[in-house]
Every structure is written in structure tokens, then in C-alpha cells.
Amino acid sequence: MRRHAFECPVCQSEQSVLLPRSDTSSTSSCRECRSELEFLPDGDTVKVGATDPAVSQPPEPASDSAPPAVPDDYLRYRGPPMRKRTVTGGTRAITLLILAASLAGLATAWGVHIMPDEYDGLQQVKITIEVVNATGPLDNVTLLVDDTTANLTAVKAGTYTTTVNSGMRTLEVQAGGHRSAWSEVFIAEQDADMEPTAGVNLFQFTLLDGDGGATEQEQSVQGIWRGMFAWCPFLMLAFSLIGLGGAWAAWQRSSFLAAQLGALFSALALGFLLVGPLLGLIALILLQRQKHAFSFKTGKHPPP
Image 1 (cartoon, rainbow, N blue to C red):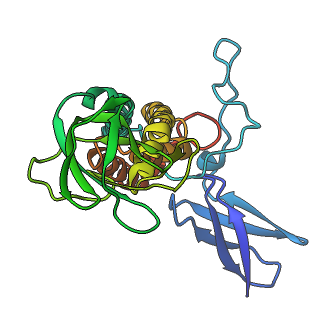
Image 2 (image 1 turned 180 degrees about the horizontal axis):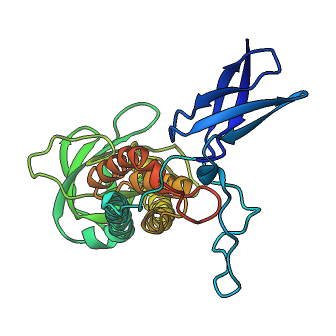
């Protein structure tokens, strides 16, 4: 016995059958259409035909008035049965999530950009100043806030308190026989009974002996504030714009990768701190479940 692969002449399905090694003909039935088939050995080949002539008879050629809808040289479709593509709301929900996260990022970027101006003069904040030199705490110092002399209250040697307006402020400390020191600080709104916290409402200065120009002294935490005001709005804006592009790709279902990047960057935009990242994360999870709805190369939706 030998196994022979063949194509049913009736339903064109591909099958295989066991045939004897002799030159005698044999019969079998198609497993798909149940048609009776006859196998005729012809040298090294085997001819397959239907035992019923009416079944094996080829269709009549199309007339001139009705040309064939499908050319004869087109390959026959052998995949799963075709079905109409259903439009679901999955990609639309993903689009809305990415869009909301991106818009939240844009709003937050604008809020961070205008924060110094918004906080300017919004509240009277009590701050503490600590001044030392090479030998220890320093008495009899003068504090200038935006080039205006402030009223200081001595708490102990080298420690003073005063009240200033919130917002970006320039603090300069002066003392006789010493070089001045200054710092640009951002003073945010805070509770009236807040304990002195370095870089927030407690600022420390070390004055150098002798004459010379004023020295700039970095305050803890303030570098983070300035970096946030300088870079965060730009980065949030860029990430949000990428997110908007991903939302458009998700709406068009044109690129899974673009939608995925849009969801990721919309989360990184940190819209409203936690809201944007949460929406972007949900969009990323849903994208994995809707991957089949996107085209990867041609821009056309793939078949179901």
C-alpha cells in the first residue's frame, strides 16, 4: 500500500488515500463532499475522477453577455469561511483613554508652566533663615528679599524668621566684614504651623570672610523645583503630542505600534499626576486584547 495525495475534482479539497501498489484501479469517497472517486494508475501518476459523469462534468463556459466574475487563473481561497467583520467599541474606548490621558498631560504641562506666576503673592509664608560663617552662627545680619530689606526676628544666635510672599523670590544675606550670599528660591503655599523644613521654608547661608562679590548658594530641594519648571512642561507637552498621535492611530486602526507608543507616552505625560498614568496603563492593557483589529503594514484592516 502507498499513500497518495490528491485534490478532489468535485469540491477541490486536498486529501490523501491509501492505494495498492498494483496498476489496478480503485475507488474511494471524498471525505468532504462524499462524492465517489475513481483512482486510475497511469505510469508514475494517478488520475482521479468522479464515478458520476454528471458530477465530474466541467461547468459550461460563460457567455459573452455574462463574463466570469473570477478569472480562471485566480487561486482558490482555502482558508476558513469568510465572515463579515464586526465593528466593536474596543478601539474606540482605547482611543478615548489615550486622548483623555494626553489632554490631561497638556493641562498639567500648562499648570506647571504658570505655577510660579500663579503662586506669586498668593500667601504670606513664614520662613526661617540660618546664617553661619567659618567659626559658627552669625549675628547682626541683613536679609534682602527681592532687593527689599526684610524685618527679621532673632530666634537664637544665627537663626532668624520673617514673612515673605509665596512664589519665586531672591534672598540675599549681608553681614559686616563678610561677603554676601544669595539664593533664588521658590516658596510654595504651606500651613501656618509647618515645621522648618530645609529647602521649603528653611534656608541656610554660609558667609565668607572678607570683601568681594556676592556668592550664590544652592538650597536643598530648590534645584528640583527649578528643574521641574524648566523641563517638565516641555517634556509633558512632547509626550502628550505623541499620545494624541497614538489616539489617532487607534481611532483609524492603522498602526498597532503607533497606538501602543501613544498610550505609553500619554501615561508618561503624568496628566493630573495619577489620572493620566492610570488611563494610559488601562489603554495599554486593552490594546493587547484588540491587537487583531489593527493593520501592521498596509494600512488596511486585516481579515478576521
